[in-house]
Amino acid sequence: MDEECANVASVSKLRACLFDLLESLKILVKFVVISLLCFNLLQTDYTCLLNLAGDSANDSLPIARSNISRPRVFCLIFTYKELHEYSDIHSQATWLQHCDRYLFVSNHPHSVLEPLVVKNRYRWGSMLISFDYVSRYYGNDFDWLLKVNSDNFVILENLRKLLEPHSPEEPISFGCKMKNKENETYTHGGTVLSREALHRLVTVAFKNSSICYLSDSPYDDEELGRCLRGVDVVFGDTRDAMGRQRFIPFTPQEYLTELKPENNEWFLNRSYYEINNTTRQLSPEAISFYNVSPETIVTLYYYIYKLRIFGKNTPSQNVTEKKIKFN
Image (cartoon, rainbow, N blue to C red; front, side, top):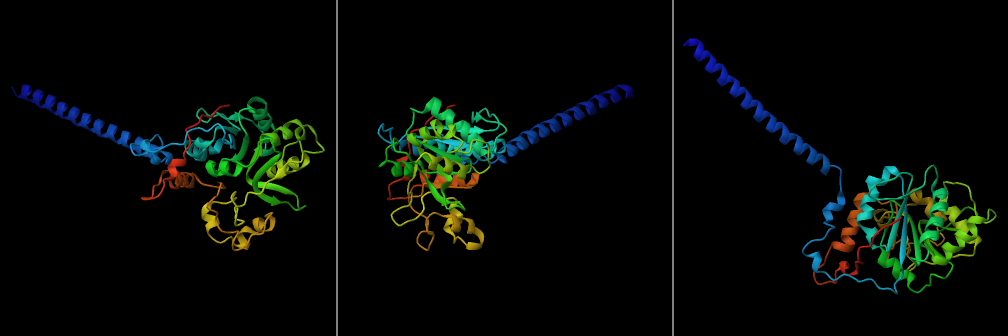
């Protein structure tokens, strides 16, 4: 009898142990799930905070429909592997949706960005290849080519407003005009090329080493300026009516504070136009910012396209239809 009781007690203890083990496993599973969720949140997918897929309030807003007469802008974004998950995915989900077409150029493939892959090149070498590629395969599908880096933020509506008076058949380019040590003009922090300017580059400049440096170089802005000058492409004036920059080679935070000579000597010395108390102010017609972090990319997009002010026309009324990228 005592032995039977002992067996019953052992079975009860075993059941209790198994129950405790099961409960512990449940707790462990919950912990793992929560940890994974927290890990995913810590990847800082800032764009999800904007609810870019749309919300009930935003769905009712009027959306600007495609206008066949408006300037068609092809956005070409230069990046590299380390920035794919850092800034590129946020640019893709925000301001790049306002391009008519866009294409990344990178040194490494990516399943979402689907870039044109150019390996073992500096930026200038990648530019020589990608400009020829875009002109060859898509030259008739756009009016203007916007060349930027992965840390730019561009307001496409303001860019199109600047481009409206101009024909894509003009040999002209736009950007923040700078001058090198030889007092030669180039643009920095993003460049816009007319279709004719791009055509001259790839059919004339890129085939003539006396006009264009055809080897690789880390000085892509200055090399591009040299090639454009060699085929008589004009550098257009992108300032607003008060002489303020619209292509800004800084973050908005930097430009809203005073540009101190000790910190920004290169810009103050190399700017094509004089920088004074008026022209150093931030233009309400700004087109491009540079060296922008992922947090700032998403913040700017929210302020420009999502934030509404009661009693005012909403910025979102200027949003264009979502466009596709391709390569």
